[in-house]
Length: 106
Image 1 (cartoon, rainbow, N blue to C red):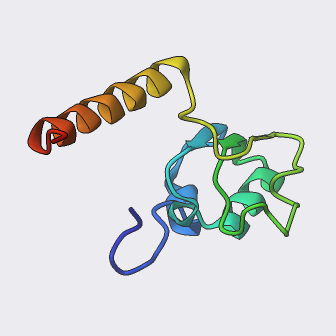
Image 2 (cartoon, rainbow, N blue to C red; image 1 turned 30 degrees about the vertical axis):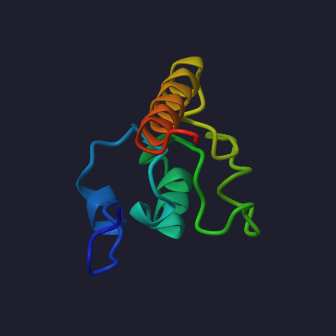
């Protein structure tokens, strides 16, 4: 989750401390990045690329970041893999079996 004070982890100050040419991947929370600061760093060449599947507004209404040529943007499906679906189904079945075991049909 974002820090309690609401400030993004990756803002202008953090970007200024990073090595030029850094690549950023964010599949967690959009609020972790200051989108205007990241866009400015992309334009200045300090950030080589951004891969993200989260935006402050989804779908993004301001498309400057999503449409930037050095940005890979996808819908919020970064964690949607065969493994994650299998794990989610296993948990769902385990939960269902636990409820049925606690409340057997009469």
